[in-house]
Image (cartoon, rainbow, N blue to C red):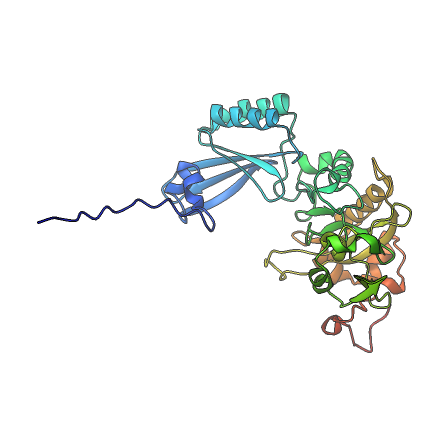
Length: 362
């Protein structure tokens, strides 16, 4: 008589999907998850969070340059080990938040952050938060400008607005290195604009997946064509809106042009549902020179918007809410930006956004 023993094999842990975020939280956050009583702003860059049972957690926010060396990341981790039991987090806007339970550790931590790392403390409350940006020349495969460099130049000018809370409400800024706008919606957004359809290298089109390139166009401006006996693509210029999505799928369709690419500034976007609901941003000014390494024309336009917003908005109004209250006509008057036909939303799928009132004045 023989017996068969079934051996149950141990399977590898499942690694698909998002990991359990709670195991990475500070112990005080895990203990009081969903049980926080209130929070208060101690001063710019420092938030005190108090739980229902009396536990206190201090959050110290520092602005990082986002693009960091391994040595810098190790220094950040060393500071977190020293004061935060090894716990810290990066926000979606590239701020570094150190989590402290002992109030006596706050000032020593700030001293180490400002001297060892050189990072400013701030970005909380009614201030300019750290600027969200796309990859730019360092990493992305289709940028027409450098988002990271523009952020560096702009934050040099807005440094004091990060370390202080002097606006009616917080201001979120983003920069995008191409027209696809991975930077997303923001109170103020700086985006690249192309001004002609892509230049097609028909000899190299065979390296691309042509059906995929055709399908990626949001306005159906790309169609198949045969060139010298080989399959290729062409662009219907009347439909093309110069977004550059095709170039992201096919390097043989070059959309970038250093002679004609310019920068535009959009305002009024937000993702939060507080006060007014989420909103898309709208064009404020365009045709600004793509002028590295400091982009002075962009900096001047952003400061102009911030100045008029600070002077005219009511407390707690975001930039888009302020504009909607005073009207777009008044916005162009106080900023000095020129209103043109290109500010009118004529996108072929934008019928629901048209203002059809007979009383509208442009």
